[in-house]
Amino acid sequence: MRSVKTDDAGSKLFDLANIALMLALVFVTFYPIYYIFIVSVSDGNAVMRGEVAFWPIKMNWSTYSLLFEDPSILRSYANTIVYTVVGTTINVVCTAMCAYPLSKPHFYGRGFFTLLIVITMFFSGGLIPSYLLVQKLGLLNTMWALVLPGAISVWNMIIMRTFFQGIPNELYESAEMDGANELVSLIRITLPLSKAIMATMGLFYAVGHWNSFFGAMIYLDDKDKFPLQIILRNMVVLGEMSGQTQEIGGIYSAVTATNIKYAVIIVAVVPILLVYPFIQKYFVKGVMIGSLKG
Image (cartoon, rainbow, N blue to C red; front, side):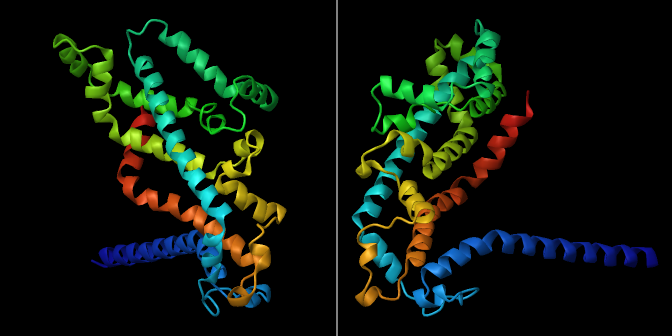
């Protein structure tokens, strides 16, 4: 009896330690985002004096009003959304169409093509050859320079191929007996049974496009085509502010460049964070099933 009580006490102590550890991890993870938010809505003078730590001071939304009055912010925001949607669609479609034939044991040259594709994971042409290729294709200063060169991630393709291999072959044999060809099998059998991996890959690609700024920095010259991340980078790294934000005054007198930088970070991060809850149920399942089978 004494032994049972000892076990109960140890179990409770273990649970308390786990809870404390989890709360600490949640705080460490959540606080940076929270801090950025409270700085963006606090009085600029208080921010400059370093008084903002856990609570906003003289909370106001002037920063966000100023931010969304800037046409360059709205334009870059729209560009980012377009690049993310178009790029992710191309990524998912191309990855699925590459993974599907490689998942078929009877596909002629399957091993050779897989090896050829995997080699590109370890050896690439480099930045200058990639730039010259995009230039020769006439893609410079266009959206396609951002979404086509990275149309397929080899690692994601391998995960998707492995997921496709887990679909029972009897389903394809039944469809073949009914007269279905490979395209019909892909559309009517494989894709409906692969929602988990498709959602997971879509999230991977979407986050990559949303956060990407290096490709835009190299391939785009027209400022009207800049994504939001370029504007954010210029504000945070180079300290360049748009013309409107340099004319801060009047009702915006309490807004500083720091407020605006942090507000842009919030505006850039929140949309992609809101996507996670909707596909979380697919996320774990898609990655685990796709990665465990060789």
